[in-house]
Image 1 (cartoon, one colour):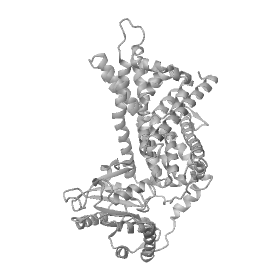
Image 2 (tube, rainbow, N blue to C red; image 1 turned 45 degrees about the vertical axis):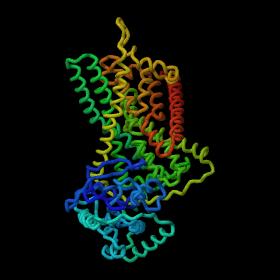
Image 3 (cartoon, rainbow, N blue to C red; image 1 turned 120 degrees about the vertical axis):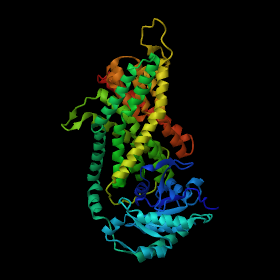
Image 4 (cartoon, rainbow, N blue to C red; image 1 turned 135 degrees about the vertical axis):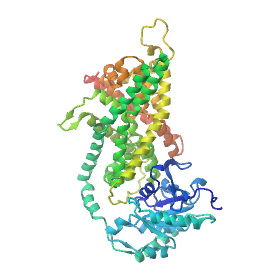
Length: 626
């Protein structure tokens, strides 16, 4: 198989162990121009970004999932192996492999680069985080290392200006040398080859590295507190509590600004000389529906900010370590903590990241419970109901009651995930022990503003695209259902009572009446299967069309005047558990390789949602909330 045509854009693949700074290097090289997609046939993200080298050569940089060996044990490591070995589509076959290594922790990285050297592609080694290695007293003879490995070795500091110059210059040289080369048939190493590579890596390490290094002193002092079995858990809970308080406290100015913009647009449409039906479509369907979802963008950005900050800081691995004993008691692997915490932002990347779990049973259990974690799509629903029914006041003199309720909803999601995993482990995987939890703890690093900004921008644009596609289409559907057919002549009731939406909602009323739901809620739940946020927009559209200036301006005011507290609490309980996200279910089907576990997830979550809403409504009514 011959190399790609000289006119094609060369592909440079970044390969390395987890926590080696590979993604920071990728962000430094590509900046905000990167694109996130999925590898063909799998749901592991690939990040691709363009780069122009110092010689003016256009290349594509591909950031591959972290791996310790080409003898892959987990699905994400399989992706890296298949790309390196040329088993994927041609657009991701690398012309050059850059093995990125943490200069302060070289042992496993050297074994990986020796494996990469055997696959028949041009390879170079980039010693990243050299500043940290020097600070820890580690000296590396790079010339001797290059001689021992038989390939180019450069140093880099991804987070500093000019820290990638030597790397880029060597990329140019290697790509020139690679032109016209042939691709051979590659094979992955067997166990014997892996042991041999490790022995050779240890020999090279002893020959080229001076200084013991050891753990970073700041990291050691911090871990003495943060990994304490009691103090560490208290700190972790405090971090999560602050996170959820911030979702309310910090986001309000941004939400008010966005709400004012959409209110202005709605008023502008109201003053235009347009037919009433078209005016209703623009104001109630598009502006009111989509705007009622986009207004929650500041809260979602704040949530992602905390998650990205903790990841870049190096705290996520510590959180997984702290939660291992608790999660193990519930039947979850310690590595499941990171996918579950990622599911606070969105269950889809959370489910994707279960590929770091080697054991299939542990991975499947994590996939089944990940949708129970309170994702950012629930934030619009939670915020709407909490804002309408929970007073905005402080308790204990310093804690916001609304934020406390939000924290409680997140806690219920976590507790239910642990409870379901406990049941699954003892009923489905009974008598089958899991693998021990082993995790490398990286040194703490200061988060880089550029990486945080790129991450936040990427996730904000994903949310806005979702608002402009899935949510927009659902809002148009809801508006049409709520607007047609038109009321007959002489009708005395509100026009929406004669619509298809009212008929559909009334038809399923016998099923939801025990939950305290009205027909408007029923209508919102159906399109909400596409995306949870749609429920908020649906309610906004329905109550706006129902009439009343109050409903048009603020959904929360309409709900507080027409719903009982028991209904509101039951609605919250429903959304803690309901499987209302078609994209998540689709990813479950792809990750598990069939429809079986998709339907298992859908029906068990639907049953939990119904029971939780029923009990919540009945208890609230009994205590006078009806």
